Length: 264
Image 1 (cartoon, rainbow, N blue to C red):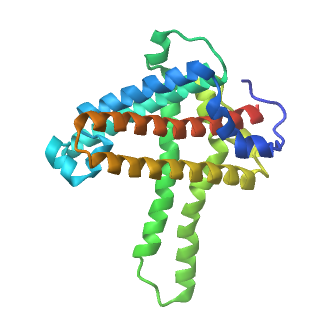
Image 2: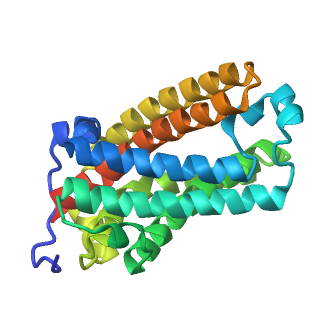
């Protein structure tokens, strides 16, 4: 992708922005299904061997099967899963959405594209962290008797809630990184997404709501599976949960892909 000469605002399509991320979940047919199964299996293996199965939410299961109690191991597990998710996003956008051919070595070998995707995701997490910090500062503050100072403090700190909202405008960078395209400058992205903030926010809200429903159901499923106190069923439960989480990642990748495509 080359830097466009026309940086005027682009009117994003309503249907594509709101419903596109869900419609593209079923893209790719059998190849997409196999890709999801493989990566869900990898995540299941990582969580299983490190003692971080979803069924470990049950205290009885934790005691019976010696779930991981080490914070360091937990962090390492999350880092490994994050790396796997990044590689999956790259392959989903490239192989499934863009129908690019890749051999097995290219699929699983980390490359510079993965590093760029990870960088954008970390910045996104940082923007969410800013909003959480703002929430904490408002919650933990001691009210100032001077209403002017109190109002200024509230107004300045509340700006932190806007950071992740504004970050939505730059999620197309993830698709650009996955496809190895030249990334548009932040100013160009800002200009081209002008006037679309409400639409982007609506699309993200719809996506997050569906993701939340899926994750809550997976949590309930894992809690129920933990009652069986059977290690084999726990691993099977973990695979189902990993597959469900993969669907939420797909919706997010689709959102990024459509934004990038509509701005190109």
